[in-house]
Image (cartoon, rainbow over all chains, first blue to last red; front, side, top):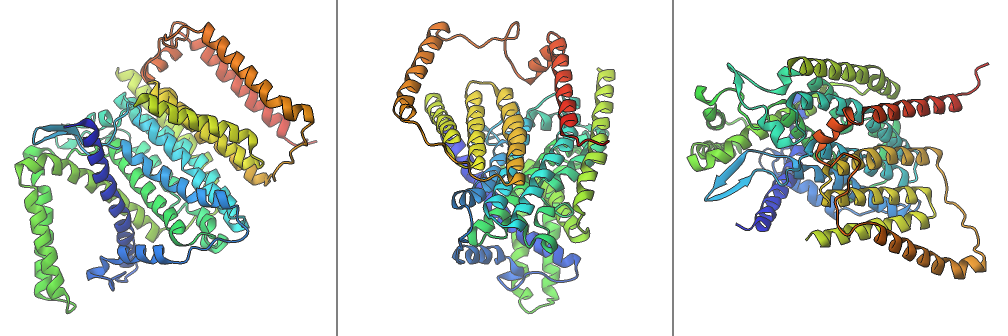
Length: 391
Length: 166
């Protein structure tokens, strides 16, 4: 098939799925936090609140778009655009699976595969700070400005340990291409997968901590600390412009989780060898979920559960069945492992948000420069030494 | 396709560069400079210099310009006042500038060969691996001397910025 058409098709599919994931990530976050706090979360709109993201989007689009009189109009409009642009661009270099051949068409499961994928992602994530900083400054409001400045300082500080943490697995794998990094983690030592998290666990922990700071998530969400700064850099934004900052935050979360999966968790490689039956894990999980749905439908806790749960059960049964079709297996299995690992890291993000309080600003900076940075340097040094001794 | 992309990004770079000089507000200038850097990175990418493009993005747009913007925001620098142009500058400035640029273009066009790859001493270009290898073998001394120079600059900045203790 025409390379151009194929790329266009892949882009459309990835963008479509990515946008829906962003919308539903917010539903997942609200549900998970609700259950951590012993609530039920959204459940009015659609079964179990599943249509809540749709309702939210409609609400945000139709809301009045206020333009405060004291803002710097051009930069005020530019800021959300920049934030979303640099949040979404990174997904274009992330590979989701190996090269596959479907109906005679051979293609890689990624949009683009530059030889410098890791550097590209670092560069783009460095540009992301402009959206937030600009929003804070253009709003012409002291709380917004404080939020924007905090965000710039925080992102500059945490980019250093993040880059140093990434450098350690790159030294071991000896490549900068994300696809080669993923391929380098294939295989097993016995049953233990050859993932980077086992070779350099310190880098993984450092990377995850910096990722929390880079995406402005609790416990590092100082730029939007509501008890000090109203809502931080997006105080003056309303309607879709406000929503685009949230979209950028969630997109950054997904990207960072995908990078962590690629670098440390073995990308799309299964958690134990296929000869012990790892190919059947997705089917077992989906059919197990179907079973749970059916058993709960027998003893419905709420009246409508009688109708909604069997529908979900049949859906899960069908999904589980899809993983048994040989033609689809080569696409779906890598996709399942990749998405499963990304979702697991996203769950940690949400879990931490529901659990931890916020840092104080000076603690945040001290932590970055006096703890994270030296540890990352030391880690890199030790890794380099071991790599040099082994080669 | 390459030519179209080149024209698009070259146009962006030129427009941003002009806007950087013309902007009244420092933030506008700084952001225009970011635009120039990003467009240059795209141009490097088109030329096949992937590593240079990434370095451009990470170092210039991602780190240095963020610091610039940060400082401008922190100091809350206002818009600058434009000096009133003298009549000579007003009427002769633009034609002279065009003549100068035309001359420069002519000279550069004459002095460089039509289409030869860019070379740097013995280094023939290549990916991050080649660059790293030549940095730590052939160009080890210049590399280390440069890092010492930067260290001296940092120390100097600290000494200059520090308030008198005694």
